[in-house]
Length: 210
Length: 254
Image (cartoon, rainbow over all chains, first blue to last red; front, side, top):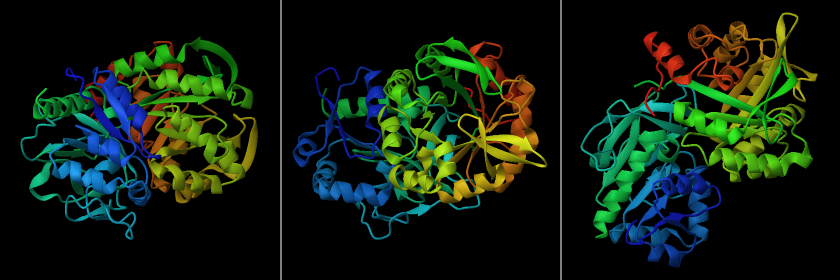
């Protein structure tokens, strides 16, 4: 970002930080890793990347004291992009780990995709846009994005901006004020994914008065 | 809205350089992995696989550096493997920049490895590579880069592997590998019908119609090839346009 503002990537052991760092570096966006409560509290833009297991992620964020700082950042207006498991973590719970509690920014639970389709939902799929979206602006309706997951949010109310389908329709992208999340991996989705990241960076820059 | 069929170029390396053999042997040099990765990323590959077919312990740091160099060129998923025998070796591969890792010989020796890797990294990161060769009326899974038969039926092993936590199966027909005589459709279809995880077919690709066949008749979710792409016998975009014209869902844009 031109004014020297950096994007803070929330670090936990199972994440895929390097992929996201490389994708943002290609757009000349500066990043830093945020692994402590203080670094998250100080962040002006956050990304919660996600690969792995819902329960593992929530327990790691909990044991490092990161849950409250993340919730405070979101309620305080800091732009945050959740990716894949980072989208799922925003919900109250997940069928992947029924005993663990999510960030509970959004109500409801994350469900297992139906076994009638091949699982994981692995590969490139298209979206159905359901309402205008800052994140998906400028992307053709037939653009493909890379997915790799077996669980998904089936419902996010008015926050849903795009859905995808694999055996059952699910939330592929959502937006609510300063909160953004995608079930696919923009950092692995070629030019279309790069556009999503660029849209997020542009929105965050405008928000922060860059 | 349909999941696209994937086209996956594969870089078989000696840890450092891309090599290619016929039916797993007679290796020759086929280029720099990072340069090839950049080209395939640009030309519309859906994923990339990079394998260390030498898989010797001494060369492991070199291979990890190769993964880093390849990953730096990609805005698409990367799968890497070769000789992974435990969770720590798997972690080293993923930390170097791969999104998924393949396991083969070590999983046949100790199937529990698949469960351990899936528990640690998630099934979506664990690809079971099976080198299958026709033996009698069926196919057997071979180990050590195709040198020895494991004695395991390849179909049974694919089913067990998926049950134990593999999120994808990379199925190579040893009979077809490097022969450019088309994918092994009976082998691919037999396994695709029996497993609940995505199946990547490999070995024997030559013409665009081979890919059409492996998706339509072989029921593969993805098709992998090496030499036809390295040698520029087949241009990736041209192949995808052909498949699109035949009604196969493929990703045409970057």
